[in-house]
Image 1 (cartoon, one colour):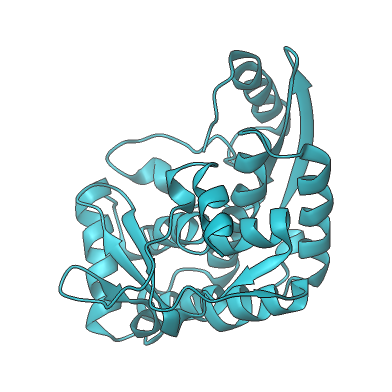
Image 2 (cartoon, helix red, strand yellow):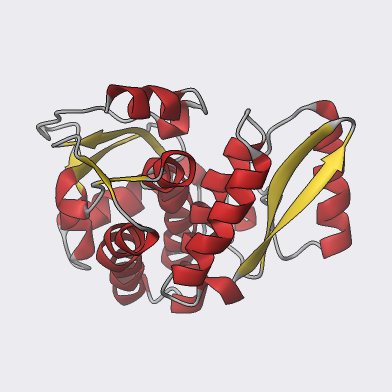
Length: 251
């Protein structure tokens, strides 16, 4: 089990998990976020709106959804992709610590439970029990579009495969694992974006092309994600090729 968590951390800070966590005043239990009217969900949305200067509640929710799926549950997706195991990241077992800036600075597990399990277990625990109900809760609270929220889920899940492919992961294995995950995934994620494989400058990796927008460009930072559907596919691919040649890992 220790080797699983150590291997995850080798792919970057976003995959680091604190274990044996007892949520306190600095930690928010993730199962509370599934209640659309909970104080905890309000706390998460308010913190992101202050940090990024978003223009509306629904834009804030879309940004939170993409960042949450790409950080909070990303370790479980990657653990399955590289080791064939599933970390218990059902919401009752997970807590988050908010960053004073944009996003989350800590993800913790109450119990560091890891099990050999098929992709269907991953889909149930990460999508059906966690990310999709969270999207639905934010839809109720902010009226953000459910398709756009699910687009954030799709983007965040794909990010685990893509980032790992450019940080030493086996590209063939990760590409195959992503297709297996996507086939099993609920929520219509297969219609919300596409993973492509590029090679440039002697480097190779996976990249995501979104079909929905998280509206982060409406924040005070006024920047678009590298996968933003507001840019053409040709422009996104050209940008990805440049950063791949330079050895940069875009988020």
